[in-house]
Image 1 (cartoon, rainbow, N blue to C red):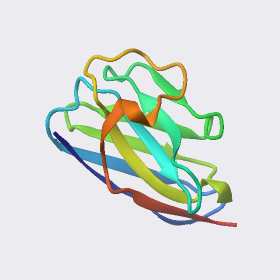
Image 2: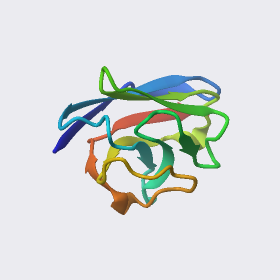
Image 3: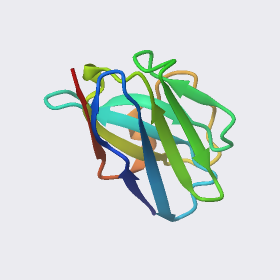
Length: 129
């Protein structure tokens, strides 16, 4: 069982930056892909970014590509999401997730949420227009 705790959210003006962090505990995540999803009020949860367990492969939603960067530190067991050039439509609860199956494939498309079985409670990001 993986326990995930997100931090780093807050209120930021449009065009600003935030860095989210996901701290993990329990089972090691060094062999699991990790991802960020987000959910805005009244909307479905959507994929944001995923990083392979090796840290060498990443994939992003089109809406954040070029603005967000996902990274991981397998020694510290953390996963970060650097968010630049934030837009009002980035406002959402951001959730960290760990993939169910170790040593998984490299994602080159948005992974289904069903592939992730450990979730954090989320950290709120609010972008003012």
